[in-house]
Length: 202
Image (cartoon, rainbow, N blue to C red; front, top):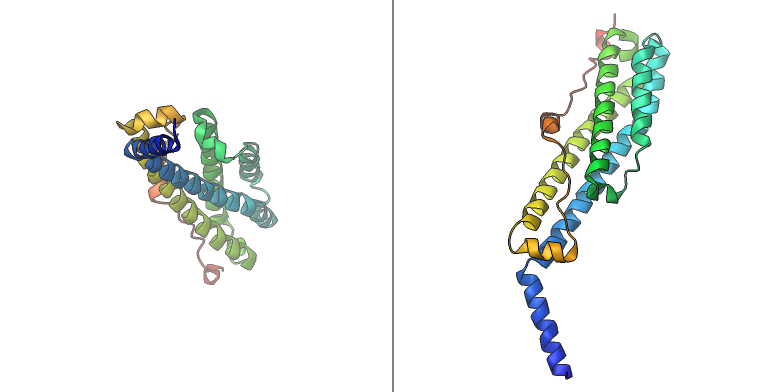
């Protein structure tokens, strides 16, 4: 086979790949990876805030030990899961990760509700700063998760549709797991953290 024939085959192969959605799959795959990285970044940001939050609350509400322990244990459970980019290719591991993050969200919410009973804590500047950080992080998590959901939906639609599904199978691209439907409400409306102001302190 001559050089010209090889060149023609390469060009034809490229045209076929483009026509079968190879480049589209590649682009959407990169969007999923990028969106997932941002989800992990924001979850890590929240995990990093929790020790300071727990210690600050403990100084004023140490009697709420059960709630404090629940948050600490939930954070430890999240930390025990290897949150790598490969997690989006493993539906079972993804489900575990999602469940662990859900437990942490729930435990953190209970802790924040408990703090309403401690006016002195609500007027502590360090606590107020953490309040703002927690609220901002919850909002960032909601945005990051929403972007990931959209990226995965677009990617999954492509790899399941003809003729792109043939290309996906040929190159080993499979549908990716997504956040479950029962969490959609919390994604659309992240928890609001409102501890009132120092002026409300007796």
